[in-house]
Length: 236
Length: 236
DNA sequence: TACAATAATTGATAAATGTCAAGCAGTCAA
DNA sequence: TTGACTGCTTGACATTTATCAATTATTGTA
View 1 (tube, helix red, strand yellow):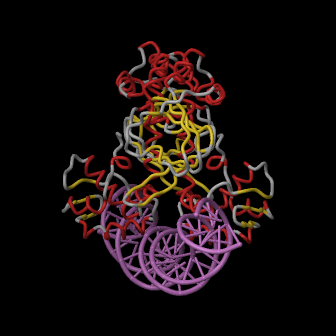
View 2: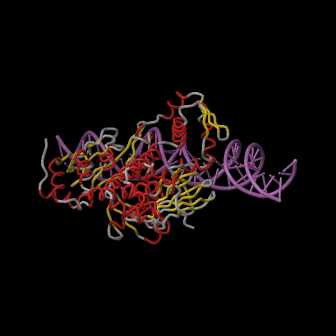
């Protein structure tokens, strides 16, 4: 079931940093081979180990990247619109390292990897954009590794909350926007442990009620979390 | 103390995948601004947070990449000749996310980031090589994250040994080539724990005496380690 | 609304991992 | 060769994290 992109969707994709520098002809060519599909929740879009035939773009809903080994599973990232995923595998023509599933009903644009590589060879400005995006992604994963290796799970949770608060414009109250069991997995801990960790942060001014987070003492939380741009700032 | 590269050194750098596609003129231009320096052991070459003024290339010796937070420190990677490091920071003109120190007496080629970006803008084939290298590096870090999140420290050690054995041509006996405390830090554990983990692997046919490793039963070790290309194969 | 299914929490316990202190073993230089 | 130094190992113990089982929300749906 191949469905071409609507103009609106095409424009959304166009606005991604990855594609914004591309000239119109090349972008049109890319979109010619692309199609869009709406998936229900909990659908596995890609499975690790399979060849990377498409670059994926979430234009609505949300997608979880996860990885498995020996019967265990861990959440690697959660993606909100509009973002691309699995660029590196696409470019390298290599197998996916991670699997992806929809978390809610989601609209996904699929751009054939072959077309990506073709435009990439043709258009130097696209290569530059790909480099920029890959370098950003690489640095993000390095930061994540530092987070995992240098901090305890409690510290990771504290810094996650600090970060989420900033995303929420610094407000004292905000929603979690992610199931707790997925947050636990993302932070590298069990759901049981996350529950307990949340309570351990109470003395530092953190209240969590269901999905609702209240930071009663930001200074206290910051003093405990000790966030640092080289780990926690996505733009640095 | 600016020292130009010898022809031999220049050739070594030239052979790196990153530079091999570059045309002679551009490569020569790059090397014109580059210089080489020999450092004693335990010298901090770069410090995380500082601006990335140079792409570094180890041509002899070895270099450790590490990161710190809140008084803790962890080894992120150990680099053998000939390899480059901190490409992403160089390209993005961003601060280093990791620090680097020499482990032994080492010869390091320094290529100004400015020149890198200039050639990068000029030469599409170089952009392609940079993309390829960044995609490889990105995937390597993702694999490392999977290793950290999906495996216990004992499993990480077992897989490390399997990997080292393959690097040693599959021989039953090989050297560790890394101080145990650094290996411990790389694997995300304490030196004490590494000592104990090594003994825990005895039932699986692993003997370690100082730097010398003997695998008496490869099948047993493999059955325990369960290596997988999507985590353990650097080329996939 | 009520039911079933799923997610979150809690307590008890176990396993993994880290810390501290002491002793041992190899290295290097006087 | 000796002595200081450093890294490695070991044991005792503490902390962190996971597991298991039971209970309590919460969600989605008939």
